[in-house]
Length: 403
Ligand code: HEM
Image 1 (cartoon, rainbow, N blue to C red):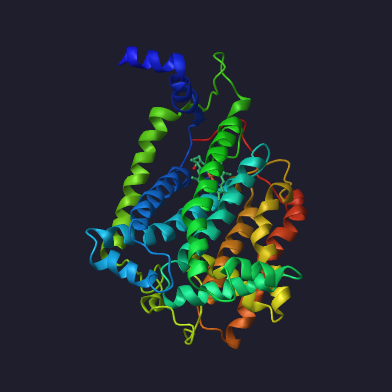
Image 2 (image 1 turned 120 degrees about the vertical axis):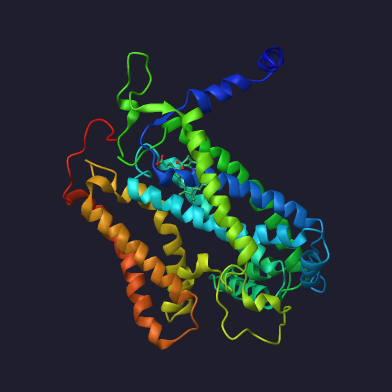
């Protein structure tokens, strides 16, 4: 083995890569469960690519065959149902993992200097993920796919000047049909996954350059021992590889429970109206998006003017991008030392949950006031952060990590 390794090392820096990213990559010793979600995101990404390749072996991107090809996968292809349910459940689990991963960033101020680029690459990944999920949603060509395709391309159509040109470019014609499915498949199966793959590599490279943050928000690289290694750091391998395996175990149990016992989660993970083939003559009673995009949909519906609504939607998606420059607390990063900031994050999460629930309900005038309050509080978080973070009371931050 060692001779084989030496042969490879003379031609490719394998041992060096393993050393630099695993056995000699020093991570803070106080990681808690919030630090599971990065490796889980890697795992779900790999699962989606692998199950997607198998689905492509039988899926047909044509308006007359797409829906039936999915039924063939479900009923005729051996283990096809398992592959498809892993892929549909994987999509929702991807967003659960990513939302928790992003929330950890908010909680511990992981977006702050020197990790601004790490955060921005993560933000671009999130935007790509939304596009990836949307293209995938249209592919089975159920009735919700069809009308979802119609609604979102019409939002693109509302962009001033270039809108109608962009909308017909996205659809491949005037309506949603075979041309749309072909281009959406090219985006869903090739372009966006390739982009995501490159971005994930950039994300991990940026992480290894700055080193991980931690629940205390204290830089461990500022306290080095005589050997030049962080006093509060432990090698990623074996300590965190073993810990991450436990996270993977819990995750796989949760995934299996959904895949085997409740794959549609009552219309939450697979829409009920997607069991009906696309029908351009019959709009489903309520066109609602997948749960993970529902907060944005509620924001869009809360604004009566279509163009203004779309502007607010884009601003809402873009707001987290600016977080590294909005949070200006000079003394602390983590919620552990910032009670006011913690309260703000709790309100923000509550708003997003309420907006998500509203986004999945049929449009109703009774839901307008809570949607508008949620929307206002969402923007208030970002607008007030530069001021609040400068004057908020901050508990004394220790020099070294607490255990
Ligand atoms: C495919 C999607 C993603 C993958 C595979 C991924 C992977 C990872 C991994 C492996 C880590 C190190 C382990 C950990 O800290 O949990 C990490 C850290 C981090 N990620 Fe991601 N990530 C993804 C998406 C995102 C997104 C959407 C954001 C934010 C918008 C983000 C922001 C961060 C930040 C700030 C850190 C450093 C956290 C800290 O040190 O406290 N990531 N990511």
